[in-house]
Length: 362
Image (cartoon, rainbow, N blue to C red; front, side, top):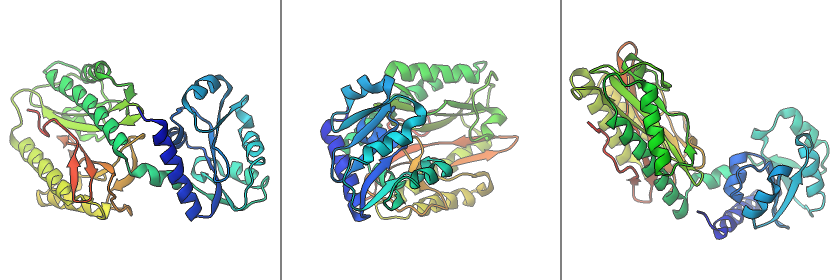
């Protein structure tokens, strides 16, 4: 669990970013960002000021629980959902503000923004990226929680592969994986477990169905666990029956090589798009370039998809403390697909692969 000291450091860093932007007060509305700063998962708004203690606004029913968790500022109870804007205004009117007021504009409708803007006299700016910058770089406590989450998720993968038998349905396979993760300590799942077999494995986000597994079919299993709020994300692919043979053997070899090349390229200061390019070149060399139709990876933390993005279009630069996925995939319509996904910690001298189980489990 994170300590009060951890949250104090986060507020201090946020206030430092606000000072750089000449922002006196920030209004945080994105639920995961509020959780990142307070440890409370159901806050409605968080007011952070350079001149006073933070103010956490929570629904009336959540007030007592919020008091037991958030110790670094004031907690204000919201009695009716439609009164949030007015309650925020009431709170900020009692704070001395000399500079700009910032609001997470990406979180609210434009009409709500215009209404809010019309009721304040200070310059109103966007702070949507302030907490995003903080969340991109994980500290040691966060990395430990992510690793614990990944260990739990790996239990799910192992359970699924133990049941990778002819006649088992995709739904059953997902159920075995999720049961194993719960037993291992998952408080929730990062997303709905994905299981796709046979020609359905050519669907990158194939949700499990009642379809039974058949001999010599490829199967993609993509899942994640949550532990103390932190997510994991892992994919493994396998073949039912006699192991990986024929064209699937070539595809598996291609994917493993692409991961290895990408991991070797990862380091602090490298453009994230370069990592995608490195893996994509390998897949194109094997002749499967047109079947790799998504970005190479993404950041993972309190959300399973967060910055930085490892795609060809990404403008992110990798930083020490980023935790990212590397997940090349090949999806051939009417034939099947293969994806393998690792989680990687960016360091100053390269990176560290966080996974503990092999890339190929058969």
